[in-house]
Length: 110
Length: 114
Image 1 (spheres, chains in turn purple, yellow):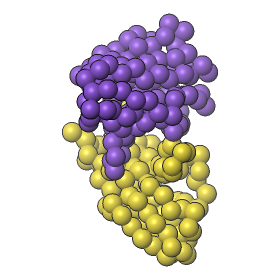
Image 2 (tube, helix red, strand yellow):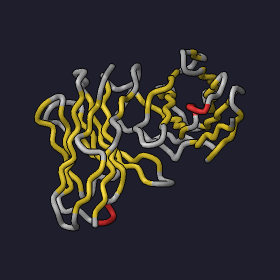
Image 3 (cartoon, chains in turn blue, cyan):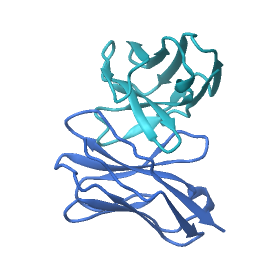
Image 4 (cartoon, rainbow over the protein chains, first blue to last red):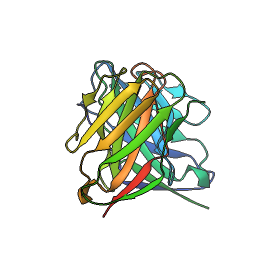
């Protein structure tokens, strides 16, 4: 199964943009890149996903490298409520197994 | 909105007990999953089910079993609880293979085995 690599933690100031990186150098052509976040004492929640093209939604933007070996989740203006663990995972058309790594813990300073 | 409901937020059980963790989803999703989450290890898949009465092992199925008698309900069973099964357990569901709509998770059950 393809694996993702993320920094353990990142820090941001409130109302500044945040770029959360994810490396997935062994990604296959049928792997979708998904991002989830987990707030304290809650289960993970879906943020955004993509295959090849950059994606935008009301929560965030996803920038995918041309070779698809890395991606970046962009929070345009971080708020204190965005402090969470962010997971980058790969979902494959060929199966159900999903590997969640340890994710990136985002700290947001007021 | 899809809801995934786990029956207990906190549970304390004794070593050797048989433990049932229940999960119910209300949006007719085909697939359901059980994960455990431990500090530094992320989420690890225990079992999943893609249809009623169907189940597949995940990465760490040892010591666990599952039951899916109805589409909306997926139960995780610890046959004989041990202290190394103390963990946060997360249930999730998805439509199809989760590629387009992703997974919806419950709030988790924090199980302590003493």
